[in-house]
Image (cartoon, rainbow, N blue to C red):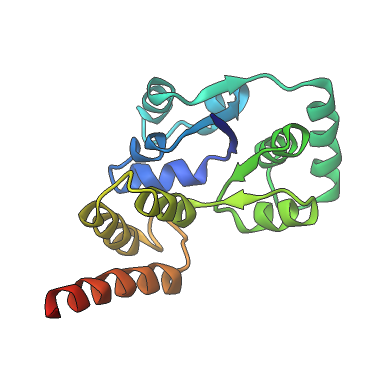
Length: 175
């Protein structure tokens, strides 16, 4: 089982399209600092309980992670304290960081931490056959529909994936 340090916004993307459970189909254990779970996963109301019920694991910070959090919180202006905590967990444990937050992604890149976001999770679900084409298309369309309201995903990337799948379906139908 592979571990991933989790930020909040990817969960909000999946909650917005009523597909909170699908990332848990991947062979990952998602970790989040216990205070972030309590203080960031507040809306929608049942988000915290649903994620914990699905398998989100609360973790405490090691001493190293604590000091890295302090360092990142001073070094990087834009990521929030909980963003710095998620980055510190990923860095100290040598695991992937799951986020869609732009400033946090940039900080992770500077710290040589691998990052995956909502679209990357969807791609892995579809590419690994954890979800069917119809589910993948639904998710892409729903994310596009919610984009700018409840989400901030790169529209160009969503549309490109949608077109690729639809084009491959047309090619198969023409054969």
